[in-house]
Amino acid sequence: MKKIKLILLLVLGLILAGCAKSNIEVFRFVNHEIEITVGEEAILELIYGEYDEDSVVLYEFEDKEGVISLDGNVVTGLKVGEVTIRATIDQVKYDEVIVRVVQEQISSMKINAESNYFPEEGSIQLSVSVLPDYLPTDVDWSIENPGNIAEIDDEGLLTINDASNPAKIIVVAKSKYDKTITCKKAFYVKYPPTEKVEIKIEDNKTQVKSGETIQYIIEVSPLSNIENIKVESSKPDILSVEAENQLIAQAVQKTEIVVITCTTWDGEKASVRVSIVK
Image (cartoon, rainbow, N blue to C red; front, side, top):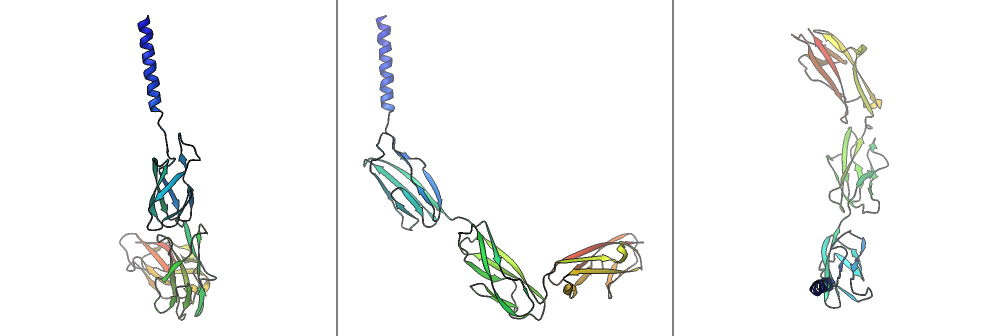
């Protein structure tokens, strides 16, 4: 019996000794990686373990590029980059955290203008707005197809030099802050943009016989855009487009489907299908 008690005491002693050895002092960062955006702040949180939270902690880091600033345990992102910060306590225990500074992205951007229609030569000041609205709005301006018609300066002043002919120009704004963001806006010279265009066959006729002549009708809004409309046939050798809004069907050996398309000066399209039967 005494032997059993002795063995039990020995086992208990070993267990207690093991517990004592496992009670290691802990000092570490709560997170070993932190990601913040430029201008954002973060608190470097520590687990002190056996140390008093009033103990002096020394923070050290090497940052030649000026990626962050550190005030006590508050880190602020200054520019895109990555810095490793070491926290030391009792001049012995230390731990490290990686602070990664990223740039907050623009979710949307648009070009603002009082009008996108120039009936004559002139200038208009453009601007951009972004979301989130506290991010920078500086952009590089350009025009996709300026020719001699239009120009835009670095400040977004759009000038139309020639309004004698109808034209559609595309202004492009590319964010200087977020190079992945670009937006575009169309501007119209001489004629306003087409709001609606439709082409149909007189009497709603969709089937014609060989040799038959039919009339097509174009409706467009605004009405001034009826000028310079181009009408084309997908099979001109079967259904040809003639003067006075006429379509003439040629002889066919089998039923043919032809698409008649009209295109306005600013690129808006409408179409109608016609069957030519033998």
